[in-house]
Length: 229
Ligand code: CA
Image (cartoon, rainbow, N blue to C red):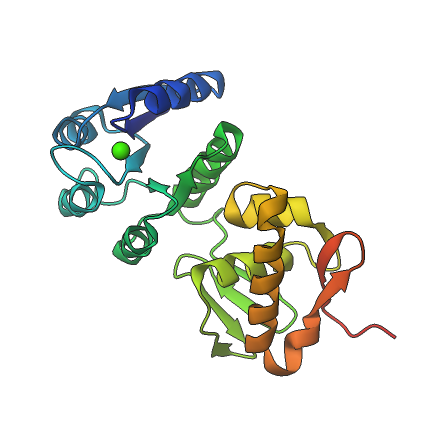
């Protein structure tokens, strides 16, 4: 069975994640502090590590750096678990090379999906998708960079994820709920305005391709790859 190491000091969260991991056919290994987590990462050789950032003993960022120093865990995919307020930590984590992050509170279903994606991405080359191209946009997925007409766009992580989500489904109207869930990890009416704000900002960065993101009335948004008559 595929072992997943969960380093999380909040026991309730760790247990909940373990339950869902077992249901999804994984073997969870739990650590409630950083030092134990680091030790288990080396002895249990998990296929993936879920790493909470705020930990007693050794914080997530430091632990992550340690993981990357050891040959046995250097390439192990790591998904960081963060509280919503810790934006800086999250960005730091991704800059360090974490594979993904999930913001608390998260839906276990979403987390399982992210785990499967990260595991798939970690598979030996050949089957993995490293790039995605839609219309004028090309994504370098491991590097979190989007090129528009061959030039890199300066996007925030959220804008990047939003554009990627739409580009993965060209010509398909995406509902507001799907966009919120896919990009922010959760959906509730209160965040509806956040979505519009980000779309507006994103369009502003797309220059002559701003119209690629079309408003789908009463639905949400849709990415057009060719102008409509
Ligand atoms: Ca914590």
